[in-house]
Length: 158
Image 1 (cartoon, rainbow, N blue to C red):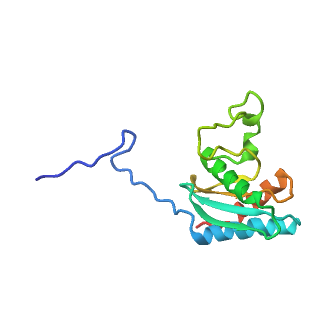
Image 2: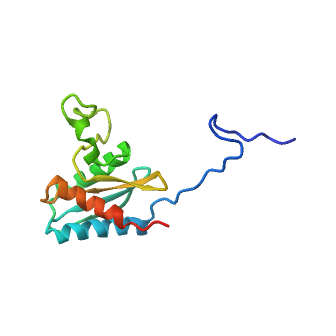
């Protein structure tokens, strides 16, 4: 039989060891939801909060009893957009203006991007590990964005 050579990508150094980055856990997702909802409650705003893992799968969701039903969908799509574009919506203002890359969202996607504020990607050690989205709850886009950002800041990472 003999030794079988290891397969490497063309950019991988033969002695390079990939470093693992811990994914978002259910506990992380609950921390994000609680922090975003707490920030919204402190401002007197009702919201829905969605947390997705790096693959776009739902980890946690919570809708305030008084939040509009639509906030469930918008919060999830905002998180999905932040994850897919790896950028908070606040950083995409120029891309959604007329003539911008995302002025007319793609319609071929099952879940087209929702380019409204408050979708924020979550990173650890420089890698994208998930996203949090805050749904419409009566606040301004800037307030919703600040709730999502406040949640990400509260996430403890080793």
